Length: 327
Length: 249
Image (cartoon, rainbow over all chains, first blue to last red; front, side):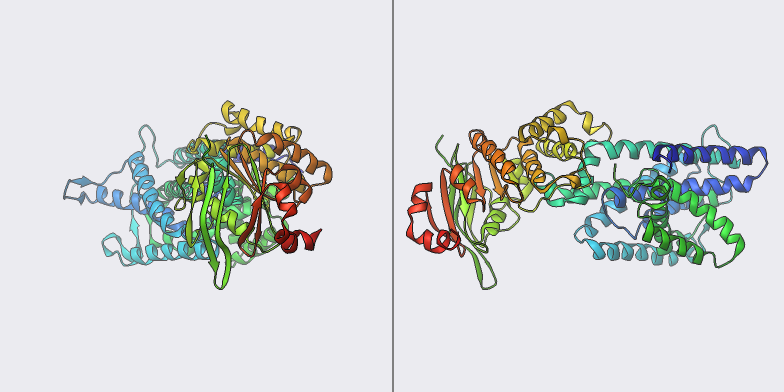
């Protein structure tokens, strides 16, 4: 059994060592895989705040992932076609600048999370799952019919967007950017989980009546958690679109919501590094099992089943011998 | 100051054909312990729910420190100084004892919107929480997970969480339940002192504790208060003996 802290350090170490090795061995594809893992990890960290700490089982986080993706897609599309995004009431042009795209992605997905959260939090349990799923489907079908931005075919962006001082087309540089964001998001989530808000949110999941009795509003706590959660997943969506230089309605599909949840369950719900371990494991399985068989999802399914049945703390729980604990 | 801290006026509440509260008028005065006793199903929990805001009365009103709080939510009543302990512990079981107490202190500040600093290193919150734990005798268990506490200790923690808010009035739903006689005695002694800080509306099955502590007792039967008086008066009351004490004792 390995101490959880060592396991976390080891995970972060892999995120440094594997790309470093790939750089020297000239294996750009491995770097792309690691970039994918880092971005998935960010998306799942977002979900972990809502689900792991707040207990909100959202099957609609693809909405925020997709919004982030389309924020990038739409802004970059207007920039590459030299058309204005809006001419009235003010002229808005597209942009190829990552920081601006991220800001837009975060703002729009927060706003969406605020609206969806405010409506969904009137329900709980299975109804909450269903209503978040329904919102996801709404966005999915809307983008399919949104002909202006490619409809079902999505949008291709020919050149990756820029970040001041970096050549984002070099895989290792774009990876570095994603890894730094991953670290910052991890740091933020760690502080959040220890903060007054984290304590109250954690209690709101376990005993909402208690939170109310001490004089706080559990629903408002959960709503704020949902907004933060959506913002982080939205940021991941913008990065994912830039990784592929392509966005399509698939980002909004319920499979995407399911996959984000799988990262979390695989690694360990409610654990700081759960989403990171889960995303890395998922990308590794996708790569190796996917090479063995087109039907690799069946093996993934079996693994998930085993983890849910025997290791409720996810892979981290199995390796460290600790059941699900919320620190 | 002679105004009651907590008062209900003609509270009525029905669930279908069941009239769980019938014109209940009670008050809680400064410095007293007012016990509510009654057989199972008499409507004690329903009454507490209406006082604390989890249930809304069909008619009648609840006053807290002279203010009509009938339309206020639980958390708003808590902010006005109502401290409650539960019959069935509703604590954050995965959290430590200290974390639960700190949550109570955080509730008193009404500001959970801080996302960065370590809440357990907040001096003010921590001091309040540790004081409360010390007062109920849980100081040695501060870092124990709540799920690992005994039933009696959970009751103590319930009281400690309520204490962190320094409330103006306590509503305690069977704080002695599940305690051994030792713990029960200890808590009796503690509540005895506590009444000087804030009056206590006490629902309790443990008759020894009730008779030892209460300044006044109200007897609730079938949703109705059939008698209110001092311990001696209640012991002597024929209707009470018939309806309640006679069956039990």
